[in-house]
Amino acid sequence: MLPEPEPRLCHALADDLRSAGYTSATLRDAWGEQADDALARGLRRPAERALEGRGDPLAVLGRLWGLGFAVSRDELASALPALGVDGAVGLGLGRVEGDDVQPAVLVRPQAFSDEAGDVEWWIASDLDEAALQGPLPEDHVLGVGGASQTLARLQLTRRAGTALDVGTGCGIQALRLRRLVDHVVATDISERALRFTRLNALVNDVDGIETRHGSLFEPVAGETFDRVASNPPFVITPRVEGVPSYEYRDGGLEGDALVAAVISGVGAHLSPGGVAQSLGNWEYREGQSGLDRVRAWVGDAIDAWVIEREVLDPLAYAELWVRDGGTVPGTPAYARLIDAWLDDFARRGVTGVGFGYVLLRKPLAGGPTLARYEHVAGGGEAGFGPHLAACLAAHDRAALLDDDDLAASVLQVAPDVTEARHHRPGEEDPSVIELHQGGGFARRVEVDPALAALVGACDGDLAVGPLIDAIAQLMEVDAAHLRADLLPRVRELLVTGFLGFAD
Image 1 (tube, one colour):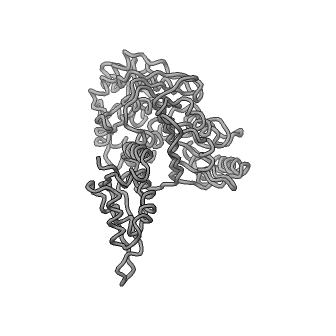
Image 2 (cartoon, rainbow, N blue to C red):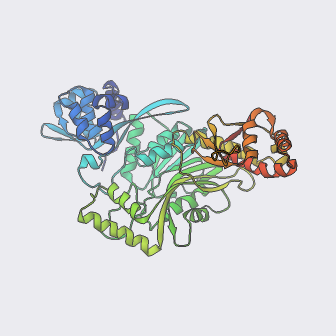
Image 3 (spheres, rainbow, N blue to C red):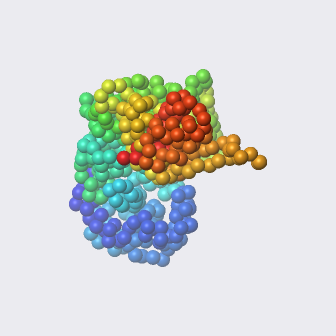
């Protein structure tokens, strides 16, 4: 078990990391771009080769906690003048074996930018497959992986009073939320994970994060929060003997029941206007869509925006997560685990597994006004949080407007929107007109000439109604009929970020 972090030692560690210049950029420069790319694929040796022969603190700490290689005790003592080797051992970060110190964890810098500015933290987590040279232990605490980065980029950027991080792991979501809220409660079923969260908060001098041990919402029974984030252990894993169950990714329930429990239970812990954001997997079963199953979990008393990014067939899904656990293709163990996954899916009639993002919100007053369940494959994730916030704001404003009010509104096209027209050879009129979104989810929407003309005319000057009337006159069609046709589609373009209110 990781020892309880001592504040004095954590602060000394931070001083040494800072003095060594231990950052993402300096490490990348130290071992080079190619080695950095190789490290992302689990290959440590190129980065180690680049650091060979160097005894400066950056290289020593990079080998020990960036890559997971042993260093000499004398080297580490020189690199940690404030903490010392004994302090590192006392924090559970390493263990002395003769004249060497073996890494017990990884401590890697994690840089990001948000509306509050640029920040870089040091995030401690368990040794990965590359450092262990084999499969992970079942109580493994993951570092900042792809899923946690995705959820962080999805987070809305508005400030609030309280937040809940369900299944905090190493604590990265709690740290991100703390930049936006005054107090964060971070829960996890793993006491080891909670100790990593406390360690990372102390090393990075972040207060206001309270950790609680327990499953899902049990530690916060009867409490509500303005924000909830959850990167739950959503991986669908066979519940049979011989299949490893990793705490960081497997919820211990059959199929997608863990994700169902998060989605169906979070509404009781949201304050009015509170927003919950999470990731998840959901099963497609014979005769039942995965998104329809999610809709049933959500119910009809809460706002919902569910975005499915991809759907994997059962075999591709099994291969993904068997490899993720460190089992190598072509081995008997790999074949046995694949069979276990396929048998498990076959018992429930699973035909595919969806992955996506879930945003739920408790309405401030009255009933819910948002129920979007869609498959959207595009977008680069970088600006998803601000994009979602802007889309929600546009939806909320448009939901209060009847058609006459919307027609009286002045709109403008988003700056990232472009138009593409496709012509058949020799024809003057386009056969297809598309609007392309450069940011957000990179949506592509096919429009007719009337809607294309309206979007093109939305420059923040004239209201929608007069623009439609002018387009109707040019096209020699009935203005009332054209208005009835275009206004619902204008609402959709507002919610998806193609259009915005000019003021």
